[in-house]
Image 1 (spheres, rainbow, N blue to C red):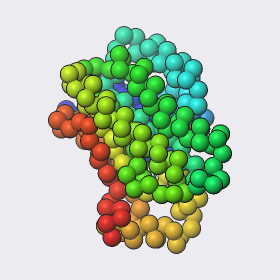
Image 2: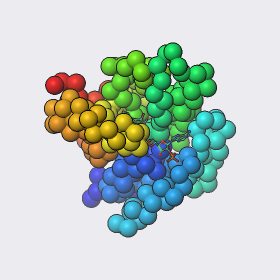
Image 3: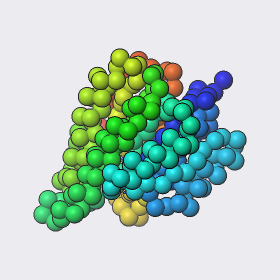
Length: 251
Ligand SMILES: NC(=O)c1ccc[n+]([C@@H]2O[C@H](COP(=O)([O-])OP(=O)(O)OC[C@H]3O[C@@H](n4cnc5c(N)ncnc54)[C@H](OP(=O)(O)O)[C@@H]3O)[C@@H](O)[C@H]2O)c1
């Protein structure tokens, strides 16, 4: 039997990068996956196609998290889709990174950073709690930078520290329902978020050399941890910050 047979998962930001990989890995283990996306419909449909190609089940749903109304609308669609069934796994993954230091960041950029990375997982979780089965899983995608912030990613680092904090309070509150809540902190992963940065081969090599394995991370490196936490093997792990960075910064 597959590890997540008949489970229902919502993965935010599953059109690309880590979220896409998570959706595919969860579906491989038997979960029905709601593939959320904001604008890149084609990419989300491709995620669904990839899942269906191996006999998995998935559907793409759109919501731009810069507004709360869209989150409410997303859950209305989920209710119609699930027809009384509940979610088992919530992966709060969607996120953006604005690279601006204190001097140059504008109020709009700061607000956008917090709307997508903090406000949306907070209110998605608020909506999800009553729709989540007891024994379920909430996995928040944090960042290595939440505990090792960088000046030029100041606002982004702050958003991820907020996610770590939220993870802790949720884990305590949802313990009686046997729902585990954890934060996974990726290091530097090869996704669109780092596309510009990694175009510079010297930057890529410099980051690789900072890891114990001498390479940058791949989305699958994170999805494997997601599947572990989502599966039965993860049932005794809650309120944890799990850095999955290949030992970034150890070298
Ligand atoms: N990549 C890294 O090195 C790294 C390191 C640490 C932590 N993380 C975290 O890991 C998560 C995934 O990152 P990634 O690198 O996979 O990112 P990515 O490849 O840039 O993908 C971002 C995802 O978020 C969605 N999204 C963007 N803006 C949104 C909005 N306004 N409303 C709703 N969804 C929105 C995108 O949807 P569309 O495709 O529709 O635009 C896409 O699915 C993020 O939380 C990020 O902070 C990444």
